[in-house]
Each structure stands twice: as structure tokens, then as C-alpha cells.
Amino acid sequence: MDTPRVFYPGRRTLPEAAEFWVLAVLFLMLFFASAAASPLYPVYQAQFRFSAATLTAVFAVYVLVLLVTLLFFGSVSDYLGRLPVIITALVFSAAGCALFLAAHGVGALYAARALQGIATGLASGPIGAALIDLQPPGSQRARRQHHRAPPNRGPAGQRLRRAPQSPGPAGQRPRRTPA
Image 1 (cartoon, rainbow, N blue to C red):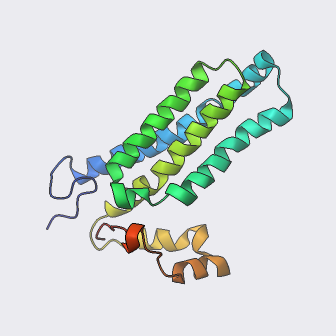
Image 2 (image 1 turned 90 degrees about the horizontal axis):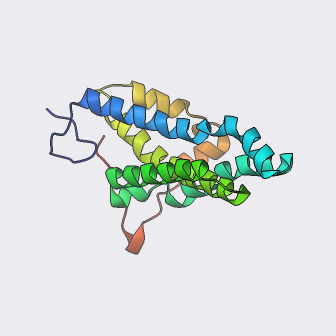
């Protein structure tokens, strides 16, 4: 019995092991791309003559935009599908990297970090869900890893797990991939 396809149910694209590794490499590449420019910040600081506080703000923009993206767009793949969201995230990541290469001022650094935050925020959910879906049938590894995750610990995490799922647009529940 075939397990559900991650991107196109019913359509054979790649063997599941290959899908897993392609997704894992994409995930690593997105996080690598978001950190790759970090060694260049002192160079940008000297070239554009900005303060250490501005440098810290450039770093902080990524985190803030990432959190906002996760908050407001973390479940968009439930409505649009995983593949379109992952492709969109890759485009945002590439645009952020290109903006770093062409940066002529501090504003470009802020914009590039923001694009990288959007990319990572958009891709984290669908890639993580797809990696869990690609676990072998009957595997308890995904379940154990999910329950070890820090957001599930403590009173706040327990309340969030028990909270009812809010309806989507027009009262519809989001589509879920069968486990």
C-alpha cells in the first residue's frame, strides 16, 4: 500500500526516500542562505558606515519577520498546497540573496533580511510537515519527535494543544494530509 504523496497525491514523482532527501536539503539550504551573509556584515558595516546598533537591528529584522510570517502565514500551505508555498519561499530566499549581493545601503540589508525571514517562515511549515509525512508507516519516530518539541512543553504548550482549531475562510477547516 502506497503512503500518501507529499506534493501530488496519486502521482508518482520521486521515490519517497528521494523526496525526503530533496526536502531535507531544501530545508538546510534555506537556513544556510539566511545565515550565509552573516560574515559579510562587518564588511557592510565598514562600507556603509553604520553603528553596531544598526547591525543588531539588521540581525533582528530576520527574526521579527520570521515570527510574523509564521504567525500569519504558517498554515497557508493547508489552503494552497505545499509545493506552491515551498516554491514561493525559494523565490523569496533567492531574492534576498540577490539583494545582499546588490546592496548599496542599509535599507537593502533590512529588505534582504526581511525577504529571508519570509522565505524561512513560509517554508518551515510545509517542509516540516512533508518530512513527517514521509516517515515509514507505523513509525513512532515522528510522534515521539513531535511531543519532544519545546512548544509542546509547559502549561502554555498544553493549552495550545487542547485549543480548538479555528475555522479557515468562510468557516471551512483547512485541508490536512492524511497521516
